[in-house]
Length: 439
Image (cartoon, rainbow, N blue to C red; front, side, top):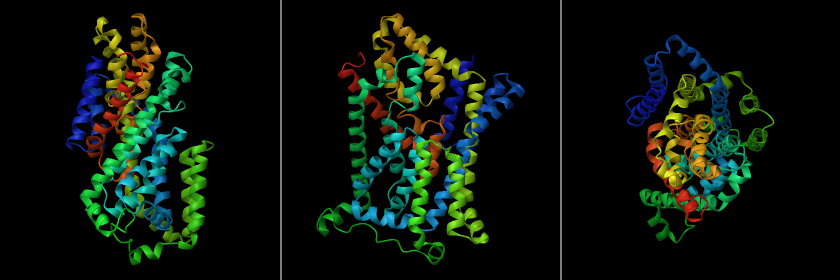
């Protein structure tokens, strides 16, 4: 009963969001509450909600102050010289920009944190996409692909899978290095092709060719600031703001201080340094308060959803029920099938319920039938909460992506899921061809 109720809840949630029948805020709160009440949990539902909100609060706080911090330093003009430099380096060619976005996200995600990757990469690249008129869904996809395929030994799915099977993480990761290499090649090809498509859409290819080649000055003219923007710019404080941002990011990536604390401190310092006048400080906060409040409310709503789904045990019931449908004669095909399904499973199971609930059961069934449980873990990390996490409504990182890019959750999912699923399938086939998992 719980498994059916849980599946119905997630299906309804995905449908109403992706078809724009409900806003994410409304759907993430209303759908799970209705499901919990229908399941007979009554007033106990409120306890699940509070637990979910409590778990998501640091992320929501981080996001609020991240929006204000990046908004303040951008208002002060820190991004202007950086964007101009990037424009000169890439020649305002979208194909170079998309590849550069993917590479930047890949490098930043070396620390294993998707949230940090998105918080650094998207604000840095978004003004460039806006200036050129490029599709911001491509920005969201590029950072999602880079963070998703970059499943390193210290990332969440790898750590969870090793802990669940009680094996060294290197036993799972090392055989997948070549597979990951193929996945990285795939996402860079996708980024390049999408960039070329943008060039054709924006009419830049023909202009560049007629102007004399790749490095010809194509695209829009340099941005002209409005009087209001000039008034709040602080060009003389460029290096101060850049150093402040670098310190905030460095300490956060190093992990010495919690991200929400660093962004709170950074916001205070950015306001005091650039706008000592109290009225101007209030004006700068007010300018970004709408975006901060909107995304904070969605993140807290996501806490309601995950809190109810976990507290009612619907997620764990779904995990236990799913493996009952695998016929014994299909045992040898379990890893490959799981690899193909691993990315879509990110839309149904949060990482804890999958890696600590569903995966150990599948691995035990596979072991009983003569297989190596490590192959189940390897198949799982090829998609489940790796390439799948930036589009899953079960992770706050998804809402970071759409919030920072300024796009809707539904349009992000509809645009990105096919490419992310393709990356997972390519890596799964590669793993089978190399003999890492049986076909």
